[in-house]
Image (cartoon, rainbow over the protein chains, first blue to last red):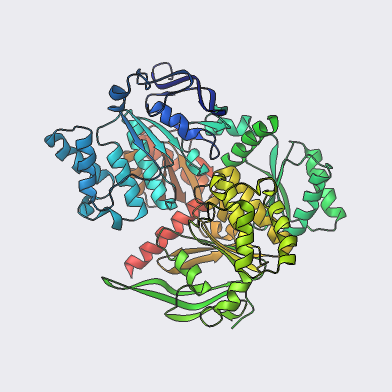
Length: 320
Length: 319
């Protein structure tokens, strides 16, 4: 299937230095037309810097990149006419109505009056704002503002859309609705590159890349990453005394008795990341028994994408 | 009054707006025991922040009772201040003060004696992993470190309970997990009570109890495991070739209790997963809709959240 699709974004050995600081370090990836690609990483890992280079806003120190066949650093204007960008700040004019915001962006992108009339209705409908076109933007709720911001970002029918934390601070129901819009766009062949701190959203990307300290540390579908990137497995321990389980495991970790990657409290349960071996499960069972702590369950559970992300990122931190 | 760490009974808060009275908190009752980590979740505008502010005595209540460790929110404001730590939403530390200066500033506000300051501040900085950054300006810390410093500052007077309003908003998953590991540590080592509002459903899973708030009301209040069980039936997942057609078709099937969209996937709530799987397969193929294998998946907090809010809003529309 992939051989038919053309890549819309190609990045080769992309590097950006700010003085001594290496923000993006020899990164390679490509995103196919119509693909939803998640660009994930801790704050300061280089996500936004990558996007800014691809938008032609800053120049790379070295490496190559292309967006829709254009070089963002050289053919900036031509490329920008076909690219949309939405940042987490939702750059909307609060004192304008929803309709006026769309019309403003439409004019900036040089749409003809007739095109604009048609596009405005389409986008208001898409954002669920048809009955609210004349409401002042500042009095719209977070979810509506966010969908309006997306409408403004795609008023010129871009073929590639960059979304930089588009759902920060929006509730789960609005986030689901927003992702329906993203999928609608992708089905029409629009290529999406999106960053997010919500791992449930990352699961919705067809492919994700993890970036840490400027380096790409893993890239694959969410399902494959869960199989390949986890150092060890997650053991869920249920106990009426979770606090005591924590204390025992924490000291086992600190004393180096057990190779525990992580021990964390999840409500009444404990999640421990350890190498995939029944020996370790038995060792934990014995350690808790020796401390006279009752346990109600001791089960291997599926890692979440968040577990995988933390495992992959901390592996690179250890390597440094 | 009560011995609960946080207590509210028939709590009501109304605001006067240009369009009349708005009920932000609508007869809310909740009890949080000492040592619990209680998560308040809900859509934007549900009343979560207002609840925290009324309980703290920062806003006046219209009716009902609210207290912290038996201290009345309205009457005993000063005693409450001494016993709680609070991180407000989008709270910003003075950016032009260093980490150490921030700690000293908050210690001074709380009236901590200097010999106590010398003991506690290094402890808290070590605990928050900030010992090597004492001279760095708060404005130059990473997002995750800022949040940890805010937590350390809120603990300088050794409160028994902390109230945190979306403390990890905009923070990456690694730093969020570190922050929550600190909260877990405080629960285990100090028995600290935590009351936290969060938009992250994975964080709600780390609470001992979760309250789901909607339109000013508490519509669910239980452990994360039990909240997930409140969603009746089983959950199936499928990726159809024609999403809109599949959604419309399935919405008309009477055994489908609820449909949720998840990107290009449909989440289908049914009474019996194994039995309905083949019926849904048959229905899809009779409509000529291609699909991948239909699978049974676990209900996460997020699916439960959406489902419970929908059920509740349907019920209130019918009334």
